[in-house]
Amino acid sequence: MSVLQTLMKNTYELPGKYKEMSAGEMEGRVREIKAQLGKRLFIPGHHYQKDEVIQFADTTGDSLQLAQVSAANGDAEYIVFCGVHFMAETADILTNENQKVILPDMRAGCSMADMADIHQTERAWEKLQHQFGDTILPLTYVNSTAAIKSFVGKNGGATVTSSNAHKMVEWALEQKERILFLPDQHLGRNTAADLGIALEDMAVWDPITNELLFEGDADQIKVILWKGHCSVHENFTLKNIADVREQSPEMKIIVHPECRREVVEASDDNGSTKYIIETIKKAAPGTSWAIGTEMNLVKRLINEHTDKNIISLNPHMCPCLTMNRIDLPHLLWSLENIVESKPENIIKVDEDVAHNAVLALDRMLARA
Image 1: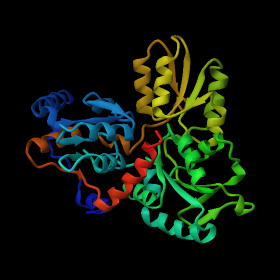
Image 2: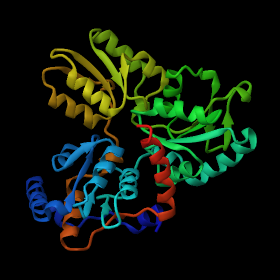
Image 3: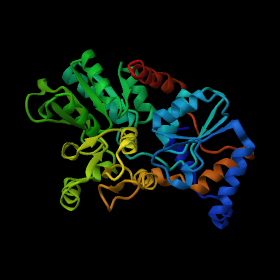
Image 4: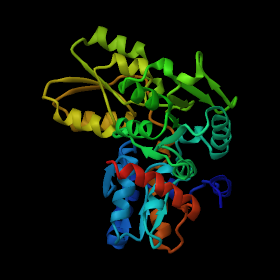
């Protein structure tokens, strides 16, 4: 069954009892089920999840890290993934056939991943191959669907994370003259620019109009950026930075490389979610930080580091809407379904898709 068919099948109407239960009652029930299932249950939680869910996570981390930890946990029969759809797909790809990966709410998706579907990508590849021949290697951010990872693997490419993007882009350009970077144009642009590739040598592929956006000699193109973005990180602006500089000139600004190029350039530092967390952790007491990333994580860092002055770079930023789909009622509903031997929202990736996606992941991991 396709993702779309699964979504259409699911009405998302939780049983009425969850509306009648207090938060305390639901928390108590989750603890009971965790104790009952023991090692048969594993709950990974992404850094961007709500605290009401993260409190029950057996481990927290970025998407690939969580999938790898899930795969290493051979005792877990049920992996209730508190994240979004593409993360659960990766977990299913890496775990064994006896493990079931469950997403508590099928509406938990990623707008960035959805900006590159397999049909758009295959159309783009055909046109790009016609224009440039066999000179392009595809790379995809792990924040992409299993189908896109599979496409990249099938065509000799690899996945990348925000932590290893520099290394993987360097590797890719040793293999071919050009790269196609999916689905986040900002991570691709920031990475390539950091490696000394001129902005003039980067083009943008528009999947809606099915055309290459570029001014100049196309033979000079080194990096083709898919026109996709993170709806959260793209909302940090130069105005946000100017406001912080004016109001708190002593404050350091650190952002995620999914932000626009001009925002990354104007900041004091940038890096992956893990890098941001570690930077704040190591920072001296009394230091001040404005962080440009998802609000749930920023709030958690504020609460965990009361010896530092931490704010969101954009004070009006909202948490990621799709990431926030996983809440306490959906988590409890998923766990009670497991106890009743009728698990719902099992994520299962087609074997052929999974095979080629593993190729893309393995090419990256071999260079980790």
